[in-house]
Length: 118
Image 1 (cartoon, rainbow, N blue to C red):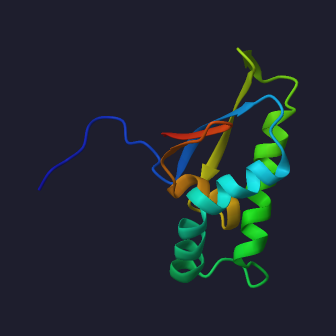
Image 2 (cartoon, helix red, strand yellow):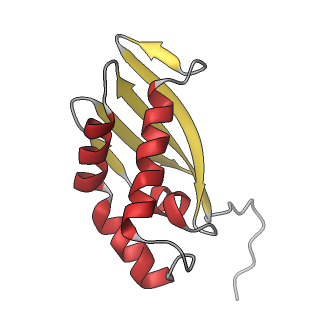
């Protein structure tokens, strides 16, 4: 039997970074979510069920909203025409939070997303 004597992290939560290029539109955000998150959304709803009122479009809309918020985050870091902001996600939540927690790193010319772990 092994006994842990060191720190154990909480793997149910993670942090993420979103970078958004100046001039990004909601249409850009929707295309990004369709390309990179749609499969994960479908898997999350299939595997975990989500809340009874959740569907693919609703979760996509939540993620688009987070991207658009990041684009106008006045506290976000400004770097060469990009706004960089951070957030947190959890597998204990449903919807966008769970999907963002399950996701990795995705890059497009106007939007970048990276789950940076616990």
